[in-house]
Amino acid sequence: GPLITSRTDSGTRADYVEWLDAKADSSVLYISFGTVAVLSKKQLLELCKALIQSRRPFLWAITDKPYRSKEDGEEKEVEVIKSFREELDDIGILVSWCE
Image 1 (cartoon, rainbow, N blue to C red):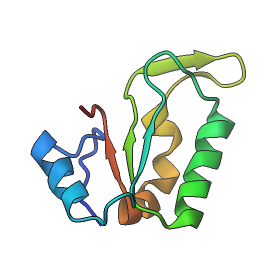
Image 2 (cartoon, rainbow, N blue to C red):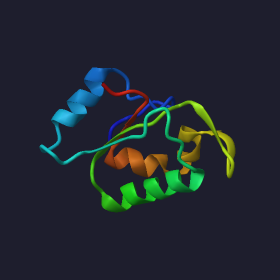
Image 3 (cartoon, rainbow, N blue to C red):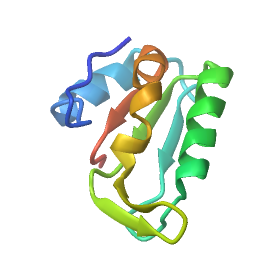
């Protein structure tokens, strides 16, 4: 799969555009909840499991910002998904920003 740096970003825009260009038309899932929506830890983990099970290529714009939820306290989204990172990297690409 694609190489992703530890700070979640794949590098330059050219990196993810090149990755997208290598995929069949309409085959990549685009995931972005923006900066307003806050998913719970449980929701993030379920999303990771679903992406892994689907085996569909995806581009996930995931923030590196800390968030606070009543259930989970304060945590970064990228830290929550850390245990799934290797499997996710085999299928898709994670970026901190996508235009």
